[in-house]
Image 1 (cartoon, rainbow, N blue to C red):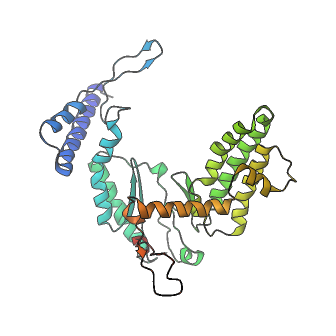
Image 2 (cartoon, helix red, strand yellow; image 1 turned 135 degrees about the horizontal axis):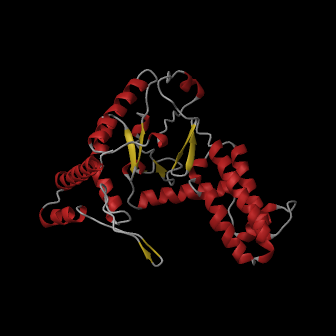
Length: 321
């Protein structure tokens, strides 16, 4: 390869990327004057080098992107990809953007799904190409969620779908049984419980309690509001984990009754923890600032024998339209 051509191409790509970002800062966010000039200076001819103990490496000038490890880097990337949100909305798709991760979701009729999704993906791919971005195909997954009879009506031969997908560390499956998620949590928790049992003779109760709470209980509590109304068999799997953890902390045998142990540790059972999480989230949504899709309205009491009760209206959700 001709290295001169390579460097010229890399320079032109870097220049185009910086120009697109500067234009976006000006047209989308109203940044002008000296502030815009500062961004131009910040994004041009930046160099960095790595220091490892006493060794200092050579200076390196990146061919594109923003300075690595910078505070402004993630923010500038989000600002650069802002038009993508508008494009996805124009395709009648709901979406969430998490820095470099984009999630698209929609409710659909089986007959209209494939054509609509392919058209949206083509438009998104064209936009990314025009903006010098490349979608990561290895991390792109399509998950269809519904009842078995509903999924059977969908002809998705032209689209490779998955039976489960991880979303912010939580595994969603096509029927929302969360069995894969609970299996993953079970495997991870029991591994840590076994390790805790090995070192438990050398720990005092407070230290063992802290380890159990921070490493294992945090996994049981993560997104546990989604476990609400799951079949009892699934909740029982999670309760067994907590029971085993409590006995490991208290150094009690497996045959010991669990309720006194949980009470001594001041631990709520799994179902109670789920209800507590739901109540806490509901209270925070009502009393604090929240995203619009989490908005809940308080209905005025009706003149009935239950008029003292406060009822909550179901949030308006475009996903079910």
